[in-house]
Image 1 (tube, helix red, strand yellow):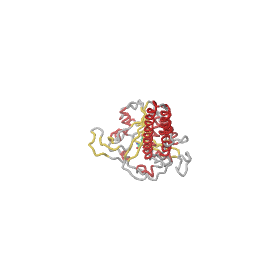
Image 2 (image 1 turned 180 degrees about the vertical axis):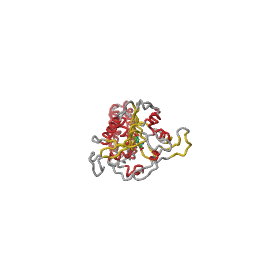
Image 3 (image 1 turned 45 degrees about the horizontal axis):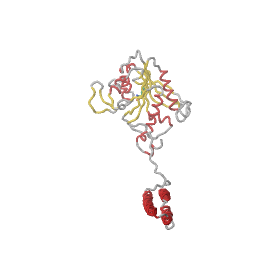
Image 4 (image 1 turned 90 degrees about the vertical axis):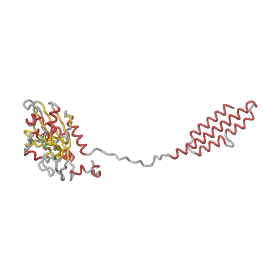
Length: 340
Ligand code: DAH
């Protein structure tokens, strides 16, 4: 009898814990404690027991009944509580806003990947720079007319006794002298930075980005420059694209070139889009001996090439994007930025 009581109690407890609704709990209560329930049947059996066992059986059954009543009540509370936080998995979710990198950041990352693959090291130099690094050291002494090319912002702080006035760097070429001061040849520098010029119209913004390459080693020639530019054109614009060098003038290179890339539509034959087959990328050249000297590098031992192009412009040429106003890039208008 004792064993039967314990087994019945355990069986009932297990089912109560599993019950998932009020109805199931009520059914269990009836089947164990109701008028014809299992415990009622056990109580009826007591009278068949020898009198010495009757008392103990009665106590055990009462205890078991109390335990079950408590379990029923607590499971009921549990169901009530979980009903309050009931989660409906069929309700559509709330989509979190997923952002992405800015168009220009994407371009910078791609340019960096291409050049670091052939051993260029990405560096960064001050945006508020001394005149000497931006101009003087680049073979543009004070009052030199070539300086007029850069519509420079001057910063109103005391002049540096040696390096002159402070400017917002108008081009990444300022990194050339800094890099030669930081390290010795062989140099393979990739300087990507913000540049500032006093200009604002549909194709200009006062702040923009340039990437500047500088390679200095023994016996560096125009062939190395051309090879590097073609490598970049193939990787950035596509396998069929090549570059050409057009003679030009910069104070800090000799000889100097403008670099063009074949048009992506006609591949150099000439079409309505490009008029002549080529699109203009930016400047390049062999580092001027005076610039090497300014950086403390002996031009009789070393030679080098450099190039410096606009990130925004180069990126737009790749994608064939015709952004009607470059200022949109920095307007923080999500309707525009989300498209890329
Ligand atoms: N710094 C020049 C500019 O902003 C671009 C440039 C031309 C950079 C020739 C170079 C170079 O490194 O060799 O217009």
